[in-house]
Length: 294
Image 1 (cartoon, rainbow, N blue to C red):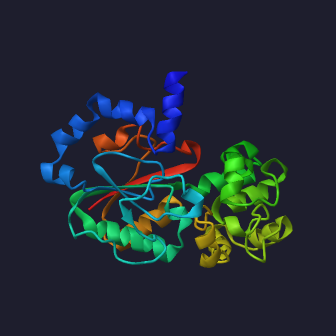
Image 2: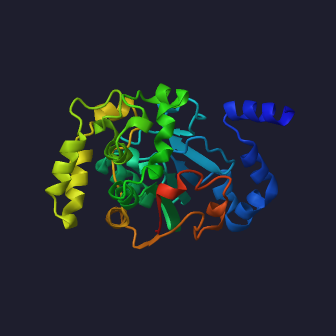
């Protein structure tokens, strides 16, 4: 009981007993064996949109807001939607980790984050990106697989409703509305304070039936383009983008990366990114894992 109480107090302060245990193991030694004292001292490892993440060698890039007010304060306060330059030197960064962040940004802002990541990484530096896989979501919708969207159940929890209001309980929503919430939250009928014009089930079926299968991305783009940035700034927890391997690869190539490859859960080519206490901690079954080397 004492350990449980201490754990809860630490969590409120932004810490987690699992993370502390990981540090006590040989985690820090792995960093010390692989990287220079300069990189360790200056924490040249950047977690973009880090959430509850804390590590002595990593620098957190994020922006405080009402949806994520329980998160520890970031080391670098940065509006990911701004399209601005990161306050970090060129060719100075060892690693970048970006997990379930890009889906909260429009294409322009997401491309800027990738461009900036390429700029600040050292030669041979790696970026690891994790996003919801639109192909998995689409497949679940086609198969009427409601179990796939179980991760959205947090929306109707007390904590979830404080972050974003809900018009329909998840258990009562159609699978079409769950799928819309998966990549274009504010036009789903589930959202309690979304866009003025939503996409109903009937409209969704009509629109998708008019699209050639090879041009499905046009329909997906149509949906996300109806998600306003004004609404996103109020509810940054919303998803307003979609990704598959092809789209993410093309965006990474546009940023300058040439060595790009698909990864998997805890399958990074970088040893320290395989620590399960810190990385790849959420939404395994819906995720696309990609890495790129500068």
